[in-house]
Structure formats: C-alpha cells, structure tokens
Length: 273
Image (cartoon, rainbow, N blue to C red; front, side):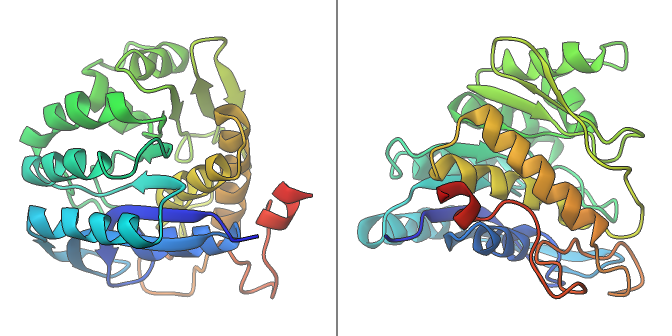
C-alpha cells in the first residue's frame, strides 16, 4: 500500500529546525511521503532570523499544481505565510487539492522572536484561510491575535472563540504554558490534552511538528480529536528529546529520537495495526 501523500505549504528554515524541514521530518516519522510548496526562504539559525525572502504568489500556486497533477494530496499542512499576497495565493492553491483535510498552523512569530506574519495579513488569514481549515492549531498568543480577544478569556473560552472563526476543529496548544496542556474543541465539549513539563532550550519546530503530525494522522483516517491526541504525544516527546547541543539558541526538537537511536511516538505502523 502506498504511503499517505502529505503537502506542506510553508517557509524554509535554513537552520533545519522548523518550517518545511521540520514538516518533512514529522511526515517521515508518521510513514508519510512529504511534498512541499515553499512560500518563503528564510535565512535563520537557532539564534535569529537574519532574512526572509518571499516567493512570488504564482510560484507557490505552480508548486501545488505540479504536485496535485501527478502525485495527489491526502492532507495539507499550512505554516508560515508572511503576507496578504501569499495568503491569497494559498487560498487559490487550496482549490487544487480537492477535499484533502487542511491543518493550519498560524505562524506569527519565530522561536527567536522575529515576526513572520505581517500585521496587515492577520485579517486575511482569519477570513480567507481559517474557515477553510479542518483544524487550526495556534498557540495561546496566536489565538488571541486571531480572535482579537484579550487576556480576560479563559483557555476554554479562547479555543471556542477560535472555533467560531469557522474551522471544523481548533487546538490551542499549550507547549509554553506551565502545564503544557492543549485544548481541543470541535463543537462538543472542550477536551484537555495534557503533556509533559515544558523544558526550555529545544523547542524550535515544536509547532510545525505538532501540526504536521496532526495532518498525517488525518490522512491515515483518524478523527480530528484522535489526530490531535497523537500529535500532542509526538510533539511532546520531540521537545523532551530536543537537540539542545545544536546551536547557541533554542535547539531543534527531535522527532526521531536521534540521541536515543530510535523513533518515538505513534508511527504509521502503529496507526495501521
């Protein structure tokens, strides 16, 4: 049986920790074939984003068209977009992928603190792409920006507010919180998905990994809730196994368990068992 075909529409991280590089690692961990439509090339390392170079909108669409015409797409993960023009291009590109589930990770700020989404692009993201997503996976800060809500909302109220923007389901990730608990909501009850204690020092790419694994699990046929649970497990283990000796800043997460010499978390074989 052919592996699931996963498409990442996101930016490239020259340091290899986040963006399409993290997405492809996560896809491979799940036993999926990864493909990419690059939205921007970033010059970055573990310390800083030194430059961002957006690709022309038509090039983004052409990458998606080439993939869909020959290979096909079973699920889509969307990451860094950057600008209104890129968001508009991705909106057009989604018309090419049929009914494949879409996981949107609304990337706004890099782990190093650099802004990766123009302020004027937030409304376009909110109105053009969020309603088309199967699952949206913001962290708490991104969820507040998306919804326009302040600090007064509880976590449960915040995930409900994200869901009200139109996706089938919402996950407000809590990796940087004290309890590292994700909140999932698809219109029923809010479901808490606890994780292990968050450890500073190797979280670069955690959001990319989480959303990519979630997309892979949807492609494998799991429900949005079960896919979110599996993504939480893999992302938490990737942070715990993080490569803290890589670079002088926030090291990359390790989805393969490289230091232990073995992969961790639910794989494609687990899913198909």
